[in-house]
Image 1 (cartoon, rainbow, N blue to C red):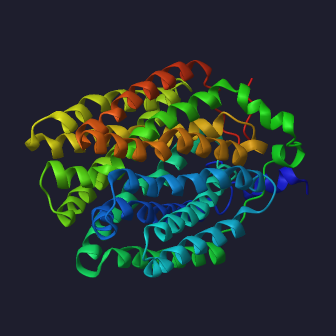
Image 2: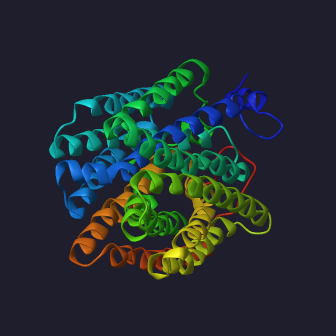
Length: 422
């Protein structure tokens, strides 16, 4: 039996490869754990700032070193993901993330805390590249927006859990215990992936294509791909900055305690974030039946619609901070599923992991790596309201890039193998 015939027999009626649902569930669960880990720090950073006597600039540097490690590792993991089995690398990365969380108990200095966050960035860089590329081998192009929407539901839910649980545990048991507690679900999910998830057979395009230097460099000329990653980078600048500093903003500008600020952020992220992710995914799926531009237009509208409620949140009356924040979060998350699907659909099958590595590099180097530090520096020089205002400019830039990128959107097919864009 030929490779194509084997793949055909393994494919379900929906066009997905056998084992796709199990992979989607387990990888989404691991994505939830990753975002839970990532958003514990913003929930407890006021305690860390007090213990180590830090400035806002130094607090912002914690995420900077996380992202430096993240982006430095991503080219290597992208290369590895296009050549070696991804399942064992995902398991190793997940266990490594859990190990670093356990080791937080022994952090007693600012330099150690920076090292801990840098090491965590290495593990998350591996998972963030391998998981979407692996899922793309399970599902056809026409289903990837839906799959990426489900996968990215973990972002608001995990972030909410990080804010809520991190603030509560820190208030009762100290901020170190918040990180240690998050290591347990990471180990459990890693073991479930090891024993129950299968490595999908790579598509025929991957088996036949030679991923040489010229092929990789072709991404630099792929306008659909460039539009998706640079638009996403602008939005990530804003999302990263707001996510990092909002608990502190609620504490300083709205007068909430650290625990109360986390308790407010949790429900907002869950309800508004889930609602925005689900609606954005549904809208893009419905709109994609009429035009492939939908995968770019939905993120464009997402960024543009966020600006007004964000202005009210940062500069409006105190009573409007929470409701306007909830509205802004809802609009921010409209584009999370479609933009990842746009990136995967814009590239040939043999470059999926490399393309995701390029996306992660762009959104972190240009996005949330500098944003938290920039906001912290502006806050030290003026105040946190002014610092948060820089995110408004980035939202506008992202909206423009996505609207322009819609012109280059490739057509969608029901084939598991990605077509090579023109």
